[in-house]
Amino acid sequence: MGLAACQGAFGRNIQAVTYGEPTSCPSDLSESGPAAGMVIDCVGWTLHVPFGMDIELSTAASHAGSVSMFDTDPVPIEITPDGHRVAYLDVRELRYLAKDLRSGFTRPITPRLTPEEIVAITSVVSSADSRHFAVSTRENRRTFVTDFETGRTRTLNQVCWAYGLTGDSLMGSAGCDGQDVSIDAIRFDGTAARFRSEEERPRDLSADLRWYIDFGEPTSVYETATGRRVRVLPSELSEFQWAGADTLVARDADIEDGDDYIAIDARTGELISIGIPYSDSIVFGKVR
Image (cartoon, rainbow, N blue to C red; front, side):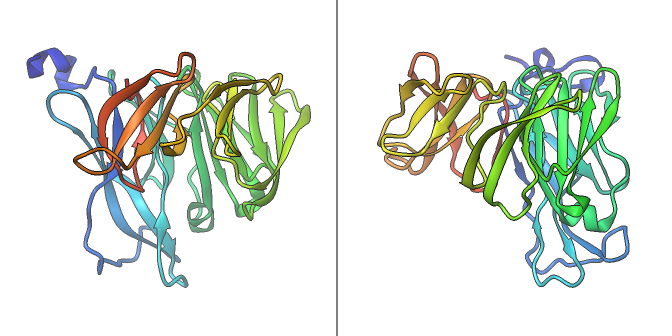
């Protein structure tokens, strides 16, 4: 496939991004950020596509911290399940932006954030239809939920983590320390119901909230609505996580050429080689 077939008007990308990773930066770089009290010591993400040139997000922060902290922490980004939109903290505007990689259109999905809010970001998630985004911070326990199509942003108070969302609800928790977490199904009409309690922050809900992973013995996929087990996952794989509504990725350390990721169709159990190398800082988009 030629490069021209992979790009839209004005060189905009029409391919689905498979995964993103932060740009390498010097370990001794530590400069004051654009806001007092904060250090952003690494900027830039690379988004990988199947063909042609990768996409560089040159103003996306990847590490930030308070000037009083010894180290900086990763600043999360989110690639939507269809691989066509990305949400990131822009170092110029100090707010999260969501960009449609096909049209080039960019929309703010949070207000301008304070240094305290930025260094306390806990999660950035998108809905299965790639339309809605949620950005959460420990500071004041707030979550910002934005509809990309309309631009409407609502603020959910006392929601410190978001694990997934749909057009009218969000799975989240008020707990900020990542332990003894109670997960609530929070509807945007103001009602909420307890889903379940966890000893640690869960990483196991599918993008459409339909399924979750239980990491017991054996590791299995369960239906959220009923608690029914629908699939036992291969015991030779590890570090399972969702990459869309019905696709899991897992680490396969037995591949001959070294660590690699493999995709699993949650509906059929089919294993699919995707050729993505293992990294502890990778963010998945549309992997298959």
